Amino acid sequence: MRDDTRAAARHATGRTRSIWGGLGRTLLVMVTVLAISSVSVAAYGVWHLGEQFKDGAVPLGDDNTIPNITALNGSFNVLLVGADNAPGQKRFGAAREGTLNDVNIVIHVSADHSKATVVSLPRDLVIPHPQCADPQTNEVFSAMAAQPLNVAYARGGLSCVVGTVENLTGLNIPYAALFSFEGTVKMADAVGGVPVCVNRAIDDPDAGLKLKKGVTVVTGRTALAYLRSRHGVGDKSDLSRIASQQAYMSSLMRTMTSAGTLSNPTKLYGLASSAADSITLSESLADPNTMVQMALAVKSVGLNHMVFVQYPTAADPVNPNKVVPSTALASVLMQRVQQDKAIALDKDALGLSTTLKNAKKKAATATASPSPSPSASASTDADVVAGLRGQTAAEQTCSLAAGS
Image (tube, rainbow, N blue to C red):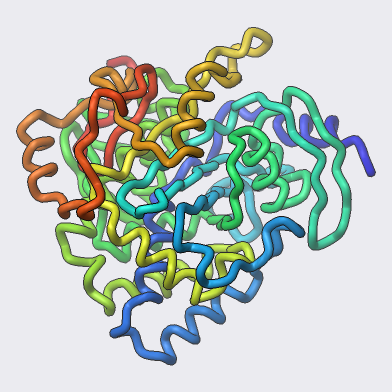
């Protein structure tokens, strides 16, 4: 056993911004799942893609064994992790010491598969880290107090990130995936670009982003730059960047829905194949049979019932560049997730970093959205959790340029 507090702190020292930031990744896993589940995909294609994913898959520990195919008949949780400075990402920024889990997103799909809650956890969230062991090396890492979430990967890989998030949220997370820069670029290109909206022109040299006012269809590195941008949006915080990432993910969902991508086996297989070499999956998620069952659940979630939320935070009294959990609100959010209850957002949920494109667009999007499953019902006032920040996949939003 070793005390790695100093090592973890060293990895975080001097980091004024993340170079990763990117994630249309909720969709990446969903699209991969849907591709493999389609009966129209050739048997060879399914086998080939499954082998790609299994190559390099990592265990999550004794409590996260590969489940029986019937395990997905109820609710389930998936953790998506974006790695900063991961191996093979040299073309996307200068090399730095250590690899950090700078993007951490939990997807919860309800037992009746009528709704999904997608929770973004800030990289700068200061929390306790439990003891964990790297299942590949058997090295044991001591528990730590008051360290940023994004040092978890440096302690023991994907398994330690899962354990840290489980400790924070109280959720059991049997499935996890690690993404690289390349996945963002490939995904944006594969769908032909993703429309993003800004309320005025943005020029963020730190992220390499230049966008004109209004809507721009972004592809490749421009999409990555938009997702990386911190100094160009909102109050220049990581929380503002999370809001932009949620706007991107919701736009990607709408783009693929309107283009019929989710019902086109050829398009789906192309998307999944292009992303396969940019993802490291837990062994539990690398099984094509598991993906098939997961796909059947995700397909029934309508855009109005897919809610993206930020994990509730408050200013860190010790470090103004960090945040700590907003305990009361976080407890309400996670209790509703654990109990499989619907989560609706109040009128102020967009906060200071995004705004609705316009009311007419919102109404048109909601009308065009796929109908929810018969068991899904419209959100009621009782479902509203006041104080949460986020949006639904049906809402068209614009990022606010810094200084707006």
